[in-house]
Length: 101
Image (tube, rainbow, N blue to C red; front, side, top):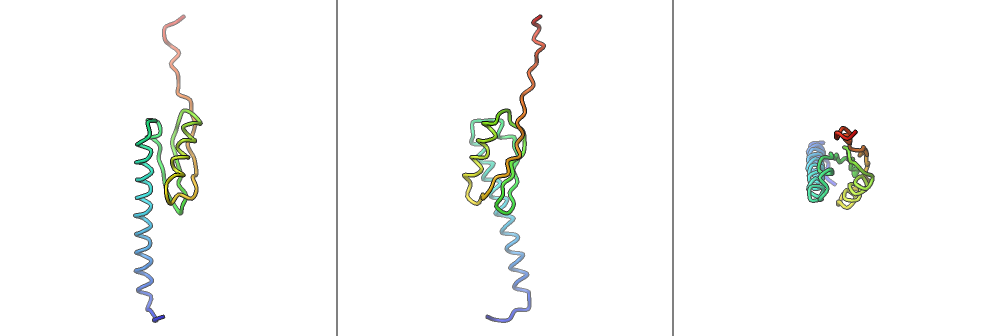
């Protein structure tokens, strides 16, 4: 092993950080593409963030089925080791003022 003055390590660290950033952005973009391919419009409004193998899902959906579907789609992605499903299930407000007495 050749002695180094630390420069190689620093440039290697910087390169690794840049690669990790690209990998993170690439994975988040791949998840968004997969979600956009879903016929469920609600899923298209959710957000995601990837860090250290964990993909966090955020947003609102109207059923536990959609929450589970989003998690299942996310787990299918290469590089995702765990999904932190922070999607909130909230009922859609129904307008009950339809004029009926």
